[in-house]
Length: 253
Figure 1 (spheres, helix red, strand yellow):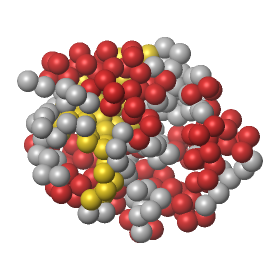
Figure 2 (cartoon, helix red, strand yellow):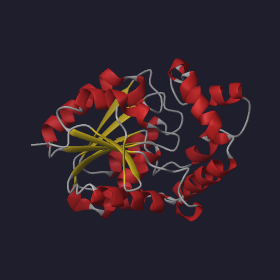
Figure 3 (cartoon, one colour):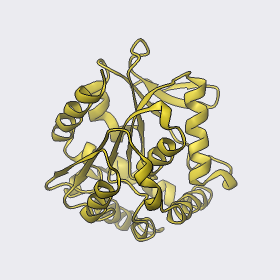
Figure 4 (cartoon, rainbow, N blue to C red):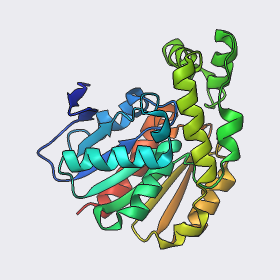
């Protein structure tokens, strides 16, 4: 995966020739590695675009959902992308929802997995505080059904972040902004085809959150993956991609 850097944006783009864009938005502690399974599977058929969201590098006052949404909008304008199928995990799902609500005409379909936006108690309790490497490892592993998904490389990244005061301030600011932005009352206005893929063992945004999204978003379908936590696309990439492929085949003409 080659990360491009242009005009203050860092991103991956797999197939600029394709007019069908699959935009992937990662979560608070997310990274490009979260989406390797999706990029590998769909990167040739569609233009899979993954902006690196600089949550820990934004000016402190911009470390909010509004600031992140603005970054995504500026990026899409810079890339001259006018129509997207947007997929978000965790906080990235929250941003996907806000983007869809604000830019309805540009969203062909919406895919949410372990999304925040309805159940924000999760943001505070799941946020790993400073601590020993072992503590951070256990906290990170708790995000997944199988603790082995929390590789040392992944844990190391989280450990460095939570021990960097400047990054912590921005992450806490973003998390607080997410807690204030419950968008349950706006979801009924989303009309585009929406796919919800959830882990049965998601402790951060439990299954009842998925059911609530399904109830509030009119044109949505809901799929659960068993033995799976908060990041289905990382934990069960093959099963995830089968469901996503069926959905995209229906809605990208």
